[in-house]
Length: 292
Ligand SMILES: NC(=O)c1ccc[n+]([C@@H]2O[C@H](COP(=O)([O-])OP(=O)(O)OC[C@H]3O[C@@H](n4cnc5c(N)ncnc54)[C@H](OP(=O)(O)O)[C@@H]3O)[C@@H](O)[C@H]2O)c1
Image (cartoon, rainbow, N blue to C red):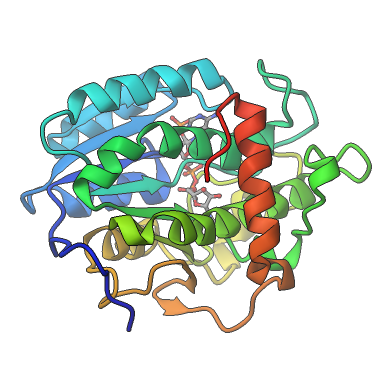
């Protein structure tokens, strides 16, 4: 198992940030982590839902719509301010989902790609000083959809040529895996750790706002017959990554199928040149300077 060269990460992170914490897997993870001694900073899109979960678990809460990068920049400022003293020990980039059409966001990007990839890319990059200070674990909720439906074309990240909700979702979740690899490549020597995982087929609000057939799998009455796991089970896997010791519990830079290293990957997931090109292209799109 891989061990850090520069840091001795704490087995129970003190400060944990979870996006997508107002519902589903993120909310369930927050509920399970509550009362274990960690400081929880919960992020959601809906102010009411986020406040309710935070109140329930005794956490601080923050609101941002990832379809607006200005919200993400403000969120990064607020989280940086809130963690000035001790940094961040773990960040769950968990907000996301599959959406309906190609209506561009306020920033002019395809919505699925922005919410699932560009927004967490921007948030993580802006939080790097706090993440490095905490020797943090960055845990990205990806999906098996990265393997089933994803094929990235850097010249057409918005899928202008071949859009479908599930292709856009698969591409964005493949971007999560490549981002995880790049975080390891760039920051492992500075004590930052990263993992991506598929949480399983989890019975949540996933796909509610989508026109994709996936909506019927998750949200129709017949969904009760599908072999799905509970939000608590999905949340337990996320909590396992957030509280685990990288290099011992899990290996940095890897993609997991729930809590097991995945054996079947999208062929593009191992392409470090693509990962690097995606990083630099993403930085350009969100207006950040290139990262060495
Ligand atoms: N459920 C599954 O079977 C499954 C499988 C593979 C991967 N995943 C991934 O798991 C993650 C969590 O999904 P879930 O199943 O827990 O679904 P969920 O119940 O729909 O929760 C999604 C979370 O993401 C937040 N979110 C959605 N759009 C957002 C936006 N524009 N800005 C900010 N936050 C936004 C939601 O906030 P609000 O509730 O406040 O709107 C909610 O907290 C997602 O990344 C999803 O792709 C899920």
